Image (tube, rainbow, N blue to C red; front, top):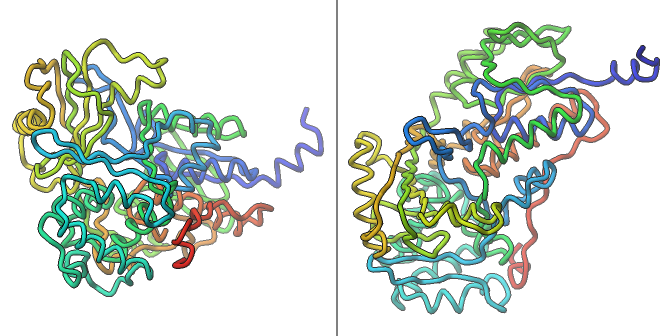
Length: 476
């Protein structure tokens, strides 16, 4: 028998449906569940994480991430979500970036005793992959960013940086590896605002901000903890539950799946922009949402997974210069931390990443693997002796929206014209590009919008940015 007090509390609890179990939906669901809402989260796939997910690959029998995802110390809301759901210890942190040239020569960039933004200065000056003229070129550009992030006035980073006379090596061996990996787009298409934001927030504000975190377990295992968090607070998480439509009236929202209907008070659409445009009812300006969706451009990412019969390197990760492959992540070594420090046998499992992978979209998987092996052997001589046991290539054709100049005019806020319908997703207005951090911020902002609408006691979930340290405090 339900007590009067419990019944009254239940009546006051707002029921919120979340459409989409990616990071944005999980962030919104966890925040609102913590604030006392009853959550029903619907995800069409059999696993969580969205574009940051993992699954058992049928061709290899291995559990693979759809693409390697990393975070930085400046990703404050994402780190908060990890702490909230109890998986913070599943992230391996690194304070050093390793730039490898063909032939294997390494340049290591890491913090020193100097205050920000000079903290990486000594290792940067000693980097063998850049000549003195390249370093002066880069330093001129970094000095220009001290005053702040350039506004988005229709200019790309490629055009903006020309005023500081970058050398070819500075572009190819510094700006491209950093910015293309972070923004998943070429320099001649990236807004100078987002490029400047990445550099200031990640590499200039503090040593803590630039630390790199790599998940040490499969991504869907990492985000399954979000489902547990919601369920522990009285919510429900439905997998293989594709939302086909929803309707809104004065009484509430009805969410329709193949399994049936769910009545709720509010709905958060934590789905890609094209899916949102299709789901929007006619009464909520479906044509307008379709026009917004058509305004976004996307950029692909390719992940190349290789399993060898022996160790090919003792590095956990590296930036690979002057070739198609941009990053190497030694997954068997990274994941060994959660297996008590023992690697999976004597072999190597590596994932190679190509961001803004337009040149590979129409390339066969066999040809991509051959390209990857050829390039990998240039950097790691031991790979020449190793036998490739299995491989696969995963192409995310629509991996992220392109942060082109002017894109922010199309990014909607999380609240909509309906007081019962809200948006989440890295494509919404977050002030960040399409990253895991941007997705979580969108979820927290959507939760804040819901909280204000239903008059929850707690209405703030977004986590503050890391403060500037050292001399950077003088520049904000």
